Image 1 (tube, rainbow, N blue to C red):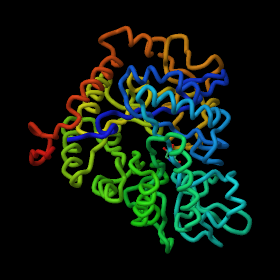
Image 2: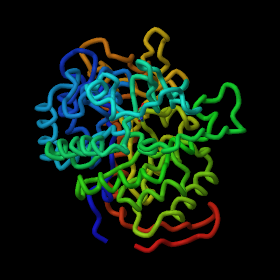
Image 3: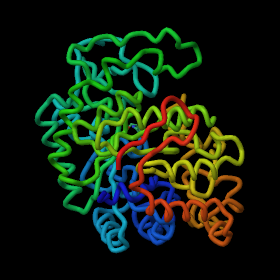
Image 4: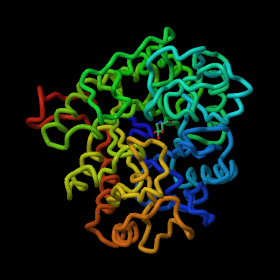
Length: 437
Ligand code: NOJ
């Protein structure tokens, strides 16, 4: 079977703020990522997914975009992106950009110049709540607008053809600048119920749980019309890679292959209890649910969830690496997991993430390159991990038995079996089965 680059290889997520600073302001940038490309080449990944670097007031650290076709000055310029793309391609690496179609920043000029691009109501129409807690409708003038996340992130109205056209132009712009694919942010939220019906209550929710999960998001997520938008994305980007951020149960997740999404992100390893039985059952269930021809994928960490090395029992990082990189399908690695970076306790005065319930600062700390903290020459935007003098790339590169070297060997080895079928050898769940090549 002929595999494409993203089937043969692995994806590595770079959180640009935290990867490499090149201008001594404590914040990583695109020129910094370019400087570190040889490391990613040496490691053996194929695609680099860059979290947003577009112009943004940074209420949600770049997921609040105020200009989709410009680079935020903190991260550099469009020319810096072009130089990064050129160098990545010279090294045989692909770039996957974060595409944020569900919402913009409230400071995007559209919010004042094209209010019709957003979702409005004369009075709060229903019980919808924001993913970050609190009501999802906020007042503006004498009306209310809908935001799935912060009030600073108003949702676009994807039923409006002008919104579609403008947002598809954004994809074209970055395709013209060399993007090899896109990770689509908050995809399940993209279209809301046209009748704006109340979301049903979740009877098992208790005081102290995530406020967002008090309701089942039946009328705000995973609406059938989302797939029409994906067809438009596909038609716009040709055969470039399309990854979709979709926190959904397996049976709903796999339905998204139908509209042309290459990789509906499979986050189930992030939430499945870490026992051989539970993990085996998950793998079995997922493999069994995939439609014919659908290519699997697995994720063990990202910028929104606790880090792997902090989530698992001590010492399980090697098993996790082996699992992620030997399962059938495309693996996505989160920067720093390859050296065992852990969640970092952030003192209250340095916390910056606006999401209070699920504070994500601990998983976004600077990449640990060496004992001297060469991420930056300034004070980093988030503190270094206390163990960075010991847990770092430089030390582990020298050590053949390190976690980093294990990742590197596994990444090389998996090229030899990336097209192999999945087969259950024993236990693990229901019926063993063999998927055809
Ligand atoms: C999902 C992103 O991964 C997360 O970091 C962000 O806060 C929300 N979408 C809103 O864009």
